[in-house]
Length: 318
Image (cartoon, rainbow, N blue to C red):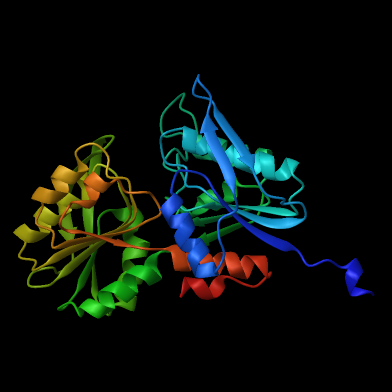
């Protein structure tokens, strides 16, 4: 067949305003610039979105986490919608942070399942694929009726901690839900495994009841998918210190750092708090002296490149 009848699919990288810095880092790793997009607000606060370049027949990747405020979610939906109406060949929603992911089940009567609602809106808006990092629960992939590539920030953290050469490391799961993640870190970093028995008497309130595993005289690493109000990790750090742990390190993919988080972390016996840039971290929170921000830009850039060329992304899970 004549090659002129089989046009090569173009490529466009778009971004909303939720995490422009990460989007630019992804573009730098891919060797491309962000497509020109106008995002503004009407006088009443409504979002206005316009793509200022031709995307007809292109493979479009839209970078936008959906953490609060709600305008971030609305921007993403409008960007997907405008790309579809502009005749993009394929639209991939690159969602570094999946907002509302903790509302994933009915744990009490008459409550919404916000994670499913968000998935429905993204699919209805016109997305063909979703690319995300460290969902709060892995089964959230099943909430979408389109393909989902679920990446892990663990390789970024493992590389960081290998350079530190920690002493007799114990990887401590802050709760049962984080046990699988903690075991993965322990295996890759040649550390032992421990787990904290924790209960939540109320939302954003954590109480440590017991620690199962040896931590005395060891450096401890507490991994989690996110730090919100920091109640879990700071309480865990105090308990581990009281049990004779040496230096305590915390890592979390998503640094929400809500409410009292910064003050709690500043006062906690934590040597370092490593997070990624899936969520834009305001300058005032970056002043936290223990905070170390690692970029997932290269990880996402590789996933985008493999997706564009219809290659497997499974090598990024190592």
